Structures are given as structure tokens and as C-alpha cells.
Length: 76
Length: 76
Image 1 (cartoon, each protein chain N blue to C red):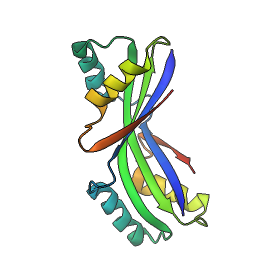
Image 2: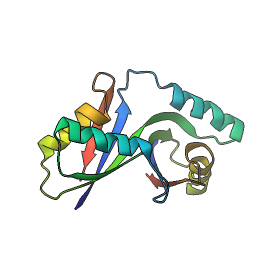
Image 3: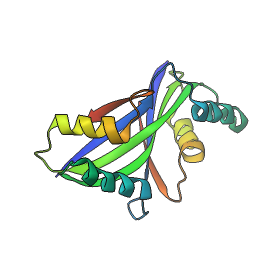
């Protein structure tokens, strides 16, 4: 069994209102020094050792991310 | 400027219906070999180089995660 992590983030040109809301809340908490916040999704998968990269990419591209507006990275 | 990544995941004993839904969809896509899926949140922050770990932990604990049901990890 292998642990695979897939991180999905909005493409840089796509607005991220959740990140903007967090950035606004930081000021009210009195935390300075944060210049940008982007929110994405994080998936942890337990997969069989012989699951190939092509299948993982198809899985991420189909189920986990919307490739029109999101990028993803896969880490084994 | 430093890029900091915060990953937030549900504690293991908390049910994850989104992960369960993805696992169910895998079967319909014909993808085998995935045994478990857990969905969390992924944050990318651009922070000043001198922002200390204590402040980052307070930020994650207050704004990014709900410590009652979620765990988080911080990577610089």
C-alpha cells in the first residue's frame, strides 16, 4: 500500500475569493507579514503499490481537479 | 518572501463523506487499486521571511483549520 498525495490549486489567473477572505481576516486578528493566501484541495489516497502514474493522472484529472480552472500535483 | 504550505486534513476518526463519494465514483470510472480517499484543504501563503513559526501556527489553528476535527501540517 502506498500513500499518494494530490494537491489541487486554482490556476494563477483564476480569482480565489476564499483566499481573499482569509487574507482579510488576518488583519482583524492582528497578524502581519502575510502577503497572499490561495486555497486549494488536498487529497490523501491509499493505493496499491502497482497502480501506475497514468491511472493516477487520469484519476486526478477526472475526479479530483477541474482542469479548466485548476492545476494539480501528484506526490508518491 | 517565503512560500509556506499548510495542509489541513480531517482527524482519522472523523467521517469524510467527500472522500467516500470520490471512492464510490472510482468504481464507476473503472479505476481499481485505490483503497481509501480522504479530502482536506491545501493553502499556499506568501509570507515575509521573518514571520515566525509561532505566528504561523496561530494563523493555521485559528483561520485555516478547525482544531476540534482537523489536523494541520505546516511546510516552509
